[in-house]
Amino acid sequence: MDKIRIGVIGCGNISDIYLTNLRELESLEVVAVADLNHEKAVEKANKYGIDLVLGVDELLDDDAIDLVLNLTIPAAHAEISLRVIEAGKHVYSEKPLAITLEDGRKVLAKAEEKGLLVGSAPDTFLGGGLQTCKKLIQDGAIGEPIAATAFMMGHGPESWHPDPEFFYRAGAGPMFDMGPYYLSVLINLIGPVQRLTGSTRVTSPERTITSEPKYGQKIKVETPTHVAGILDFENGAIGTLITSFDVWGSKTHFIEIYGTKGSLSVPDPNTFGGQVLLRKPGEVEWSEIAITHGSIDNSRGIGVIDMVDALKNRRPHRANGELAYHILETMHGIHESSIKGEHYRMTSTCRQPEALPSEITK
Image (cartoon, rainbow, N blue to C red):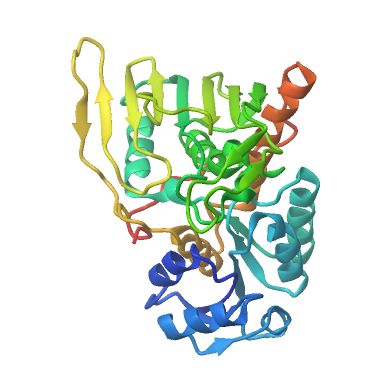
């Protein structure tokens, strides 16, 4: 198979790292960009040496494009992905897969109908740090995983983000913004979730922007800003997940996995490298474990590379739509459990992604 030709829809800030990492690869070529803001698309095309700047409709109609990288805002993910699939192209979307479960199901159903692949960020779980953790668990370093903790504790983006309003709208908040990173790692290392319980709250109904250029403007909070969940995994392990925009400071670690023969301290799931620590029975100190895989720098796009390799070799890809939908349902389930005051039983499951061999790491 020749190079997979990629078109990019959405030329915001996140597009830079994708376009940087997807250049000069033997397996694929970014051939076109599109954005509602035509000037942004022109800027990215000039910066990264991309020949075609198209309108969205033109890009979708271009038969020379095999796969579309959907980097639009979250509210547009499902709409654009459905249009891409309808146009007969594979799609890889930024997270989340969709805002609603209904839209997520539509994307997967349409792709199955058309015989096309769906991929979705985050792909940080394919990075060297987290793949090292996966190898340790598979090699039995901590025995059988029995529990996990995961914490994303901060005080929201309004102090640094230039346009932070969307973080507090329905379908956003700390869980939908950062939850995919943490859940993709937990599912990758432990497996799918079968049941969960959640509690949520809105601490402040209004936030004040302290970043430029909107300093002093008020934000109406439309979604919970502190979200806590207990996750019952299919293999019997129990996870505790908290995501918060209400915490001024915390010493909790990002993710820890506890097994029958040891404990594993996992790097920041929003990065590709990081420190891996292991503590075995009888030891009083944690031991740092050498990273066993590549892709330890900002390697966003490795999920796309793996998807292209899967297309060429007719195998499942790792950052796939099934995983993305399971993550989406888990996030919705935590919120729904809190609203109803009862356990939420998952309707979806997914394959635990295969370990990434070194020849695919970047």
